[in-house]
Length: 128
Image (cartoon, rainbow, N blue to C red):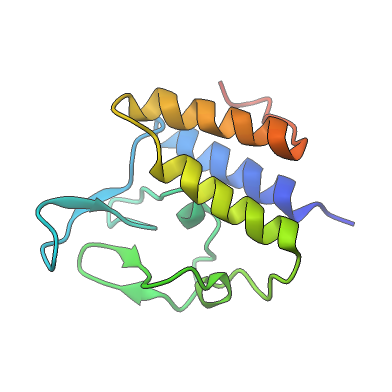
Protein backbone atom coordinates (compact mmCIF):
# COMPACT_ATOMS: atom_id res chain seq x y z
CA UNK A 1 0.00 0.00 0.00
CA UNK A 2 1.21 3.46 -0.89
CA UNK A 3 2.29 5.71 1.98
CA UNK A 4 0.26 8.87 1.29
CA UNK A 5 2.29 10.87 3.78
CA UNK A 6 5.52 10.10 1.91
CA UNK A 7 3.85 10.89 -1.43
CA UNK A 8 2.52 14.21 -0.12
CA UNK A 9 5.85 15.04 1.48
CA UNK A 10 7.70 14.38 -1.79
CA UNK A 11 5.29 16.56 -3.77
CA UNK A 12 5.56 19.37 -1.23
CA UNK A 13 9.35 19.31 -1.07
CA UNK A 14 9.79 19.01 -4.84
CA UNK A 15 7.28 21.79 -5.49
CA UNK A 16 8.76 24.17 -2.93
CA UNK A 17 12.29 23.44 -4.22
CA UNK A 18 11.15 24.04 -7.82
CA UNK A 19 10.05 27.54 -6.82
CA UNK A 20 13.39 28.06 -5.01
CA UNK A 21 11.73 27.66 -1.61
CA UNK A 22 9.95 30.99 -2.15
CA UNK A 23 6.60 31.82 -0.62
CA UNK A 24 3.41 31.80 -2.65
CA UNK A 25 2.64 35.47 -2.12
CA UNK A 26 0.12 37.59 -3.97
CA UNK A 27 -1.53 40.94 -3.44
CA UNK A 28 -4.91 40.53 -1.83
CA UNK A 29 -6.39 43.71 -0.49
CA UNK A 30 -9.58 42.60 1.26
CA UNK A 31 -8.76 42.67 4.96
CA UNK A 32 -5.03 42.66 4.30
CA UNK A 33 -2.34 45.28 4.37
CA UNK A 34 -0.19 43.66 1.71
CA UNK A 35 0.71 40.40 0.05
CA UNK A 36 -0.54 37.22 1.67
CA UNK A 37 0.45 33.60 1.26
CA UNK A 38 -2.06 31.61 -0.76
CA UNK A 39 -2.41 27.93 -1.58
CA UNK A 40 -1.65 28.90 -5.18
CA UNK A 41 -0.82 32.14 -6.93
CA UNK A 42 -1.48 33.19 -10.53
CA UNK A 43 2.24 32.91 -11.31
CA UNK A 44 2.22 29.21 -10.41
CA UNK A 45 3.73 29.24 -6.92
CA UNK A 46 2.10 27.25 -4.14
CA UNK A 47 2.36 26.88 -0.39
CA UNK A 48 3.00 23.47 1.19
CA UNK A 49 -0.62 22.30 1.04
CA UNK A 50 -1.08 24.02 -2.31
CA UNK A 51 1.54 21.70 -3.77
CA UNK A 52 -0.75 18.70 -3.27
CA UNK A 53 -4.14 20.20 -4.11
CA UNK A 54 -5.33 18.57 -7.33
CA UNK A 55 -5.65 20.94 -10.28
CA UNK A 56 -9.35 20.11 -10.60
CA UNK A 57 -10.18 20.78 -6.93
CA UNK A 58 -13.09 23.10 -6.31
CA UNK A 59 -11.52 25.73 -4.08
CA UNK A 60 -12.07 29.43 -3.70
CA UNK A 61 -10.45 31.15 -6.67
CA UNK A 62 -9.81 34.85 -6.30
CA UNK A 63 -8.07 37.30 -8.57
CA UNK A 64 -5.06 36.83 -6.32
CA UNK A 65 -5.00 33.03 -6.42
CA UNK A 66 -6.39 29.98 -4.67
CA UNK A 67 -7.36 30.28 -1.04
CA UNK A 68 -9.65 28.63 1.46
CA UNK A 69 -11.46 29.79 4.54
CA UNK A 70 -10.70 26.70 6.59
CA UNK A 71 -8.73 23.50 7.07
CA UNK A 72 -11.22 21.14 5.52
CA UNK A 73 -8.77 19.13 3.46
CA UNK A 74 -11.56 17.20 1.80
CA UNK A 75 -12.83 20.48 0.33
CA UNK A 76 -9.36 21.00 -1.12
CA UNK A 77 -9.70 17.83 -3.16
CA UNK A 78 -7.54 15.65 -0.95
CA UNK A 79 -10.25 13.08 -0.32
CA UNK A 80 -11.64 11.73 2.92
CA UNK A 81 -8.76 11.89 5.36
CA UNK A 82 -9.70 9.88 8.43
CA UNK A 83 -6.23 8.69 9.42
CA UNK A 84 -5.09 10.85 12.37
CA UNK A 85 -1.44 10.56 11.29
CA UNK A 86 -2.29 11.91 7.84
CA UNK A 87 -4.29 14.81 9.29
CA UNK A 88 -1.49 15.58 11.76
CA UNK A 89 1.07 15.49 8.97
CA UNK A 90 -0.92 17.97 6.86
CA UNK A 91 -1.28 20.29 9.85
CA UNK A 92 2.43 19.96 10.69
CA UNK A 93 3.42 20.60 7.07
CA UNK A 94 1.32 23.74 6.91
CA UNK A 95 2.70 24.89 10.26
CA UNK A 96 6.27 24.25 9.05
CA UNK A 97 5.48 26.46 6.11
CA UNK A 98 3.62 29.16 8.06
CA UNK A 99 6.08 29.38 10.96
CA UNK A 100 9.24 29.96 8.92
CA UNK A 101 10.98 33.14 10.03
CA UNK A 102 12.80 36.03 8.36
CA UNK A 103 15.13 33.67 6.49
CA UNK A 104 12.06 31.97 5.08
CA UNK A 105 13.64 29.79 2.39
CA UNK A 106 16.26 28.28 4.70
CA UNK A 107 13.81 28.01 7.60
CA UNK A 108 11.09 26.21 5.65
CA UNK A 109 13.63 23.80 4.14
CA UNK A 110 14.90 22.98 7.66
CA UNK A 111 11.35 22.66 8.97
CA UNK A 112 10.62 20.06 6.30
CA UNK A 113 13.81 18.18 7.15
CA UNK A 114 12.58 18.11 10.75
CA UNK A 115 9.18 16.80 9.60
CA UNK A 116 10.95 14.04 7.65
CA UNK A 117 12.65 12.91 10.86
CA UNK A 118 9.46 13.22 12.93
CA UNK A 119 7.44 11.04 10.54
CA UNK A 120 10.25 8.69 9.46
CA UNK A 121 10.12 9.96 5.88
CA UNK A 122 12.84 9.79 3.27
CA UNK A 123 14.18 13.12 2.05
CA UNK A 124 13.70 13.39 -1.69
CA UNK A 125 17.11 12.57 -3.23
CA UNK A 126 16.68 14.98 -6.15
CA UNK A 127 16.15 17.99 -3.83
CA UNK A 128 18.94 19.86 -2.06
